[in-house]
Length: 472
Image (cartoon, rainbow, N blue to C red; front, side, top):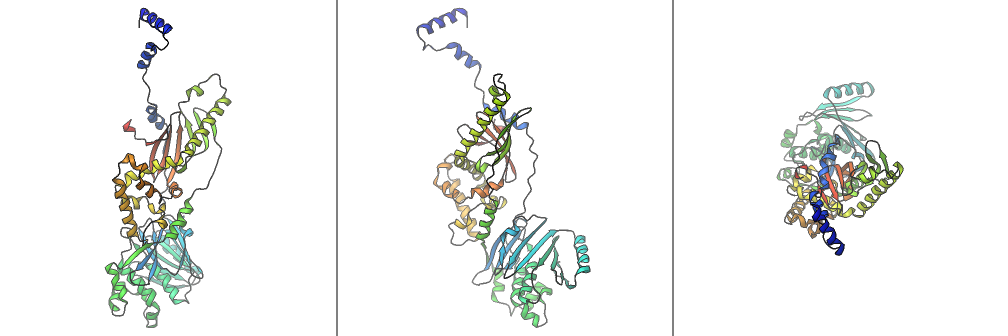
């Protein structure tokens, strides 16, 4: 802009202050607004995300029932549903005993007038042999045999029953050899250990054998036949004319699984995180960081993070170091309070991101991410709390929600109805917060959700978006 034009503009503004400032407008055009998210990639590149979250080995408990018959078992699913065992339902399971189990070791305790304990640990066959040799020195060996399925049994007087199968040593204690029914129930529990097919117990021959061993073991023992040491197929064939009709109906799918709602309630409550508070503070070395606990509801508790783009404070020559810390601390505390006030809104957005993706293949996601750990199964509107009914309910809800445009989910009746069955406090245990970056215009969250690294952005108006660098 030349001198003559500047003089003309100045005279015009003298007589009319509303005259547009062409100089300012021209400068604005020369300096277009910078997208604050352009710096996200650079921020993330400075953070190492090398944490490895342990893959917890989950157990599940349900009931295996026989149609048109009163007979039922506890179905104990081990190692994320890879293996199963059955125990007579007259025993009471102590759920809390198994919540810390891993794939390497664990235990399940149960009781009926007295306490029983089933322990397991992963071990080589050589380790098993060495342990049995050590026990021989201390206790008297009363039983030793191998089943046709390769299960090795050792029983020591005044100690326990030991079984080696599928690379695991099992130890079962608390029983009495003088109570024959109980004694056979303990052996049948160990003998029922088998691989599950699609998380279901489908080894019909083993179920027949367990049923026979528990119900008729004492009767055959009087005849001089120890059912524990009989081959399964030859036994069922030899005594088929004397077996209950229910035994043969198992092959026709006459048994079904009922969820143990009490177990899932107990497990969810066990995962609830305790309310913990550690005061926030500001630290400054090479950059400005916060320490303490920054609470974001379902999105986790962040115990460390950094502040970015507050250059007016960082580079101020008027403010002392102490004043800068105080001012930045106030900003962090206000951000936390604002987010907590919008906690429900943020929770809904976050869950919608997840379910819009996973409900495209609902049953795959249901088993992979263990929805049973955070669904309020006891509140589901099902006449029968069976696994089949639950799967049908999930598929029905998925069909309803996937018909709704994604942008309308948050306000839809279908979403709010589905959300009522999600235990947010239990789901929070699936989220591991890693790092939080606070800027004037957004929050940058780095977290691990269902063992997947995720990054989310919370904008000034508390809208959430998942950060996918290729989109920016």
